[in-house]
Image (cartoon, rainbow, N blue to C red; front, side, top):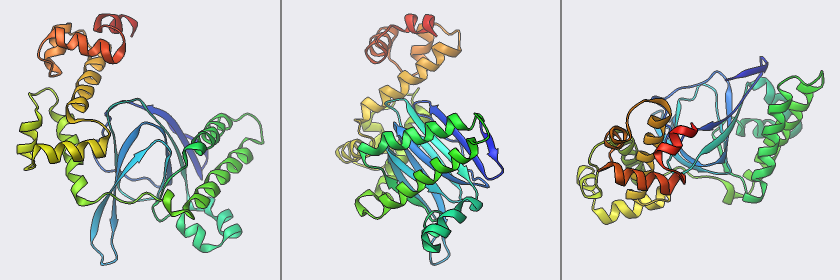
Length: 282
């Protein structure tokens, strides 16, 4: 889990399950730097607009997205289906901003705690990933220079993010209200994948035409509605194979597949092995 480096600095690096959804909004005492190494997710953050009203901002993050979430900001992430996700997180308090303020000025330091959300250029994703991995290595306490190395790598990451921010094409915009409905549909699928979900029924439930739902869903997730639903069901089945003693037929039924043969064929196409082989390997 989290391993403190000092009272000012905490790091976390992990893979996230396919279709992982946080159960509720949460917040931290630290500022949070979130970097999506691979996979994709949606990020919701609650903030107060200039008129003093609370609003929820929604962002779609993909491989290379880098975000700084200010301390005490309620937020929640949903990792979308289709691939394994890996993300790195660095938690830091405002003490760590003094260096940037001294070097770059007050405005730059303020930018770091005002919802900085960027898309790192594809060729530089490996650079950010390498810095996170180096921080992970040094946090083990290699020697008495480890903390200095960690801060050096951290400063390099933040400086690079600030440089990217000067190019507006790297700035990720919040998603409009129309796409929030797609987010609701995703949550509906994740919650009800075991039921007889169809494009027609979902379109009717959300008061949308099938063509509109299909088009917007593909634009937001990169997958067709049925393809996404199959991914959710297959991942749930894989989890059941790893963690329960249910039979193949029981798992197929509980995960929304019409029969065990359909389940077997689908599972083998996605995982390159049968459900029985997968259970034996895990």
